[in-house]
Length: 253
Image (cartoon, rainbow, N blue to C red):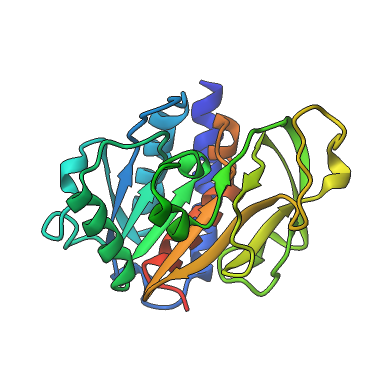
């Protein structure tokens, strides 16, 4: 019951924020393909994430969600009617070379890609995917309340959060990060965690937790947040995902 109340509270707060959307946003309703195939660890939050995203699309009137674990949709024909693809996945997804090519062509041609949490824990053996998403998961030494810095206050995706936010979640480290080709939106404040813990790996780019990047003519967004149910029930996180979906689908500049 408590989870339902929190979810409704978050969606109610989000509905109130719809007044800030540009005029005419309600008239466009893009289709978003949400892929939750788990070839590795399967997250317990996946059913809740589908519910939240479905209601988010309905409340905002900005998109309609299709959730699937059926990879046969990855063809030029199957992806034709979608504005963006969204991954909450793990491991080496059993996609054929033709399906992978169709996926990359889809984004490269001007469509969107949104990666959530373990989307960076996916396709380690496929270099083209790294080029798409910009980095790989490399352990999560912290699962606690942390301070996250908003590195671009002018961002149409994350600027609404203000200079920083406090959130409790599983915090990823990122390796192989394309810092030159990625525009970091959120970064962990290392002062809010114990950086001497075993497994902590310091890198010159710190701990990026959300970024955007271009892939051909397409737009890519990724956030490492989203492990815990409480995060999905947080109106701030919901607004971040809504903005990211709308940005990748080119509803936002």
